[in-house]
Structure formats: C-alpha cells, structure tokens
Image (cartoon, rainbow, N blue to C red):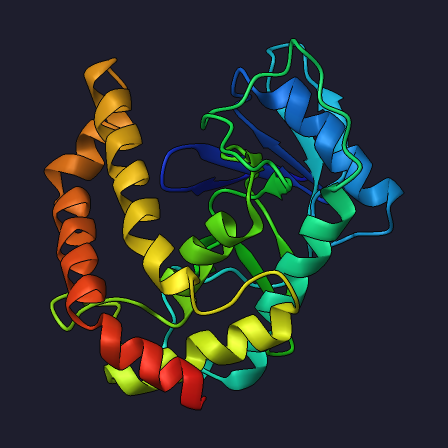
Length: 256
C-alpha cells in the first residue's frame, strides 16, 4: 500500500496519497469548500476540488498536477508565467462573482468592501501550481475572503512583479522593470484593475502584518515563528520601498 507523502508548508503539514491531499482544516474550511465547489461549477478548474473531511476533521482535496516553488528563481521570471498568473487570478475572481454568502460563513481574513469577488488571499508563487512554464492553478485557499479585485491583485503583483526592495532576498529588477511587470500583469488580468494597485500594495502588506501579529498574540506558533524570523520586518521594509519608488513605478507602469 502506498504511504502518505508528507510536505511541510509555511503554516501546515500537508500529506498526499495519490490524487488526494489531506491537510488540517481551518475553522473556515466548510465555507471554503463551498467556494471551491462553486468555482468548479462555474468552469474554473485551477483550484482543488473538495472531497470532504476525514474522521479526524482534516480536509480532503484533489491534487493539482504541477510544481510549486518557494521563490521565483531566474528561470521562473518569465513574461509567460507572469501573465498566465494574472489570467488565472482573473478566472478565479470571475467564477466567484455569483458565490452566495451565508450569515454563518467564516473567513480567516475580514471581509473587505467593496466585496466584488472572492479573493484567494495568498496568491503567491508558493501557492501557484506551475506546469510547462505557465500558472495552472492555485492551492491553499485558507486565506480566501470577500473583497475587491485590486486587493487580491495587490498581493499577487507584490510577489510576482515583484514589488520588493533590494534588501529582500526574493527581489529582482529595477523599479522601472518592476513597474513594467505590474503593467503587464494588469493588462493580462483585464478591466477593473490599473495603476492604483501600486497604492494598494502598502495597505495590503500592513493588513498582513496586523493579521500575523494578531495570530501570534493569540498563541499561533507558526506566526510567532514567522515574526521571529523577520517576516514582518521585511514586509515593513518593502512597504517603505514601494512608497519611496511610487513615482518611478507609476511612470514605468504608464509607459509599460
């Protein structure tokens, strides 16, 4: 009999057996499973298909074929991966528009107005399945929540453009190159998001910092470790970088 393969993520330990993934269920998991079923019903298959819960309360999901990377190595910094990620995020958002929320729904992140779509909440490279050099799906919907399109796009371009300063080991490119990549992402995403995303990124990072600190204060050891490792310090540095480079980024966006 095939053994479960074990993988350690940023917060959870995930196990895989064949085409089924088993992972700890958050309090929002029942709501997120409804969302995932909605996405598939609307023809969006770039997300796991929920298969219920096991006897221990872990969630069961289908496995998405492809590779997931912790960082954008030089061979992943392609226009094709950038724009296919934008197209995939657009497909997710569009498929979520008709999701019917219920009073009992639970979300890890607070609902943010205007609640235009269901945000993935953490659409970064470490949650993006890559196949043949293109974004094929998103995993780990724990942070999903209702919000504006631009709110979700802001975090994704922060990771993929990237909108990070030179002190961040994951950063690459000049502000001009980063601004052009943001423009390419937004063009591929389509109507509804533009240069204003550059002004949203610092707010999005501040919301993440506040969330991490709140979780750590409640005793969440994973977030306590992330803070101890300097993750929030890095986000604060990147916030200052985006604000300081705002004019250069916007000029490159408009020219890009």
